[in-house]
Length: 301
Image (cartoon, rainbow, N blue to C red; front, side, top):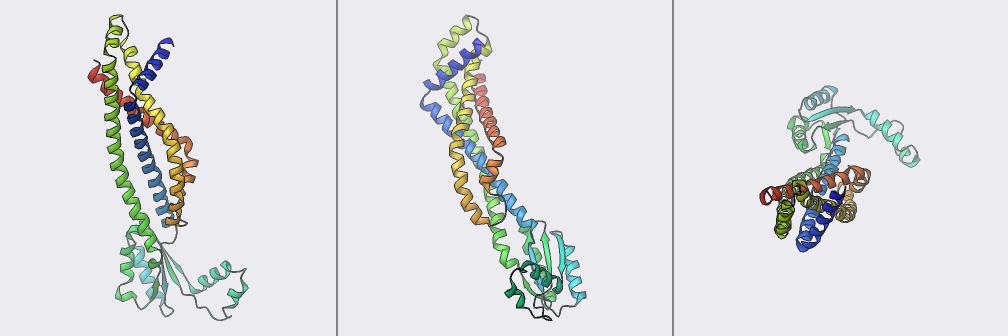
């Protein structure tokens, strides 16, 4: 226990002595944790938005009244057999009217707009996609000349831009997140490595004396490993106070961007805080200890 206290004290002294290098290493570690956390949370929330889009009716095809049952069935079978289509559901004119009345049952003015024997609502095919990004392939089939006589409108043009934006931004964030995470992980390792190397050099005489009086290898190496841990711990704490306001601010723009689709990033962050903070802490400690081990192996044989 006494040895551990001494190692912690020596690690803290080394952390203070290195001054600007310790600050630089900590800040880079903060940036690394920030980028990794952002990549994880924003990728998850964007993926959830895509999943939410996928769970709703991605595509509605409104049919002309003169479309025969055989023609409608032929189109339905054609769409159902497409690899990118998960489900095709037919809604008749009467079903559409019943759904409209149920939805607006509290608004008598809207209900009175329909006469007793009149039903202006069209039949439709509601299509659920496996992958929203492939929706244009399905639309192109329905825009073929053979189906133009029976189709009055395709709703893709209403929700297509939202699907495209979400899918595009998810792809960008994944690629950028991976690249920047790797870059800053490498930078963190290099800076902590050099910081520990300088600490070893500054204490070379002290280390030599400790070896001569019989200090164990772990007692000599321990303070440097603990110093690497301190970088990860401090960076996690600092990252929390920076990251939370950023996620909160981003959530406002994100929800305007995706509308009712997906999960609010700040809600996801709050709900999973008990998992996210320990994960950040483990990543920070691992990077610090890993960098320390490399420096110790190279400069403290």
